[in-house]
Image (cartoon, rainbow, N blue to C red; front, side):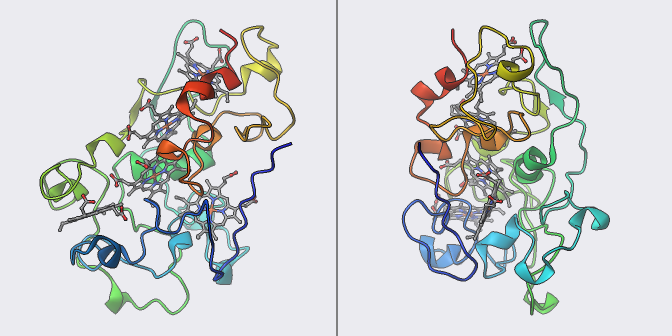
Length: 238
Ligand code: HEC
Ligand code: HEC
Ligand code: HEC
Ligand code: HEC
Ligand code: HEC
């Protein structure tokens, strides 16, 4: 059985298959890219890459949901949580609102909120260290958007990572996996309650963004849990 070892602990150096240095590591970006642009101007560099998503250890047990956050995560709820989700006549399970673990991703990727908009700042953070402006993942050429520079000319374009609030062109999410409830013959049975032995994960029997993507492991292109050509057949039989 393949065990996906996310051997991560706070403050410890992490090797291979790590978020550190990947696209979701928002620390030290200036140094890494050799530009003096991003933190301090574009977003606050909190010094720990983990707090952009996870509740800081010193706030463990605190309910971010009480403070307008996404329960269990260190992020504010996106400006809206009504998305146009994928729908079709043939869908077994229809959903209106994404689950928290997918809202986490959308809180950056729908482009409505700043990348550094967290519920809790790390211990010792002083507001005086705050960035001048707090940009959003959005390809638009305005002072609210990373697209100001990330337009394909000054820096690589960020537009394709901006999913927006219309998810009808994307794979459906937050529905119960059809291979469980409906015993739909078009879907494989999962190998266990966590999902599939190849690492494709289910969350409370649901398909979420993190089902197919693992932000902790950049080894496969686009952070996929299985290369794109094999990913689909993990679940779909035809
Ligand atoms: C972009 C958002 C994001 C960032 C940044 C991030 N994580 Fe995660 N983390 C997640 C998601 C989503 C999951 C659940 C994924 C899964 O089930 O595999 C998770 C799961 C984990 C888990 C497993 C928890 C469990 O109950 O199984 C640990 C440990 C963890 N992260 C540690 C870290 C550490 C340490 C960092 C900083 C180096 C970090 N994460 C940065 C999104 C993030
Ligand atoms: C974790 C399992 C899983 C993986 C991996 C997966 N799918 Fe799906 N897919 C589903 C489920 C569940 C549905 C919704 C089925 C339902 O409820 O009727 C679905 C629905 C779809 C639909 C809409 C079908 C309809 O009835 O309207 C398409 C198209 C699709 N998937 C394509 C893909 C492609 C392409 C890939 C690979 C990139 C992929 N899927 C990977 C589970 C998965
Ligand atoms: C704190 C903000 C933030 C959160 C939360 C977040 N992302 Fe991202 N994500 C980004 C940024 C910024 C990039 C890089 C954009 C660029 O460089 O063009 C990115 C890039 C990606 C990419 C492309 C990686 C590549 O190699 O090109 C994928 C896939 C992705 N994110 C998926 C996710 C998923 C799935 C989640 C939820 C588990 C998530 N993201 C949560 C900010 C975020
Ligand atoms: C003032 C210009 C500027 C702004 C604003 C800016 N960036 Fe960048 N960014 C750059 C340059 C230049 C690079 C290096 C060239 C490249 O990767 O395209 C870069 C690189 C990156 C990388 C790649 C880092 C790596 O290690 O591969 C990420 C991720 C990134 N930026 C995210 C963002 C996000 C998210 C925002 C908005 C919150 C943002 N940037 C705003 C100029 C900027
Ligand atoms: C069924 C599997 C699956 C699910 C669920 C899924 N993705 Fe993806 N995602 C993919 C695949 C495969 C690709 C690459 C091919 C493509 O662009 O369609 C991709 C591409 C991406 C990219 C990069 C676009 C690019 O071309 O650089 C981002 C960002 C992303 N996904 C984020 C998300 C977010 C956020 C969610 C949840 C709202 C999500 N994904 C749900 C399979 C999935």
